[in-house]
Image (cartoon, rainbow, N blue to C red):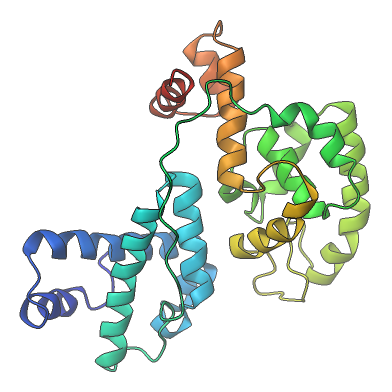
Length: 275
């Protein structure tokens, strides 16, 4: 399904902005991918398809998802943000929408070119210490726990992810943390009438699950309290790299099973371990 006002937007890019066909193709593909994401992942847009209901938070969640799942560089992040901004300005100027969700958003700083370390950071070895650290928010510690089991934030932020917890082979110290988490989490569960692992602080029965942006805010607040970067994409990549590096004797099929990776993704991480 095309994004709203696609043909009209293309005509605007051709006749008003005089952009090259290749530029228009790149720009409209970025807009299309945003709406594909909203139709699949955003309950509000799924139910209303209202352009005015798309907020800055939704755009930030989408870009965060790209950083985690697609591991886009800062330069790509900035390009996509520029393209989306062009689209929403077009809607606003032509009276097709009253919201400008991207207008206050800023680009990312240019990424510095660095080579991955030959020995992946083995932060998971200190997981018992992190889970026992009461200075860290429970959601921060739960993020570390689930990432150490090779789940991405996009997976475990989903409302029904809690159903997978009984099937995971937990170590004793992890089981102990989960007991404390459940006790602490009970108030939020009762408030929101939801069993989701990550819940908003304020009651929101229609959409109680914490957003990716909300989780990142919690992690950022806890960052000064730990000796590792509380960036889910970095934590996830390091956990994967460490496992691959220390289990090179395992078959590809076993690695793909243990890490829940496709062959293409496994080959990507194997390449990183050799750099």
